[in-house]
Image (cartoon, rainbow, N blue to C red):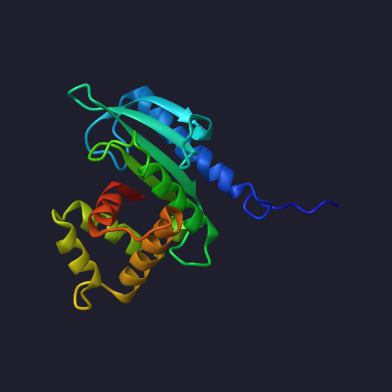
Length: 193
């Protein structure tokens, strides 16, 4: 008889994961509740597969309204199996897309965000990327942020390698070196969840 396979083995695991994350954001919108990565605000609109609207981080676009009725956008890319490695195409593609969207003139610096959502199996591998983004949000000056990232006694070799990889991916898309301020701002708006 025919052998049974699980959805992950046959290629459906990624789309199932994506659908679950999308459903959780849709539910948050319907209930008016907060969701991971947004401290203040509620989702007022969702757009599935937002490439048609010109976004590269395109699995989901959420419009969020804060308590002052100000709106911002959260772009979400869902990748079940992801790791900050040069050989991981899912990671590389997600970061290239994130940089393209961050570089758009309509991206609202200080308001909009990009969420790279990964499966629980990738949690350990994604710790360095998560730390880099958190450090950026809690560090005011770009030079202080880069000092933390590059300090051997502060950051791990994995942190520094991940930073170098993300910087290289963004510079590849930009086709030019990025300054400290641009890198710092990008990491401040990037969430790994």
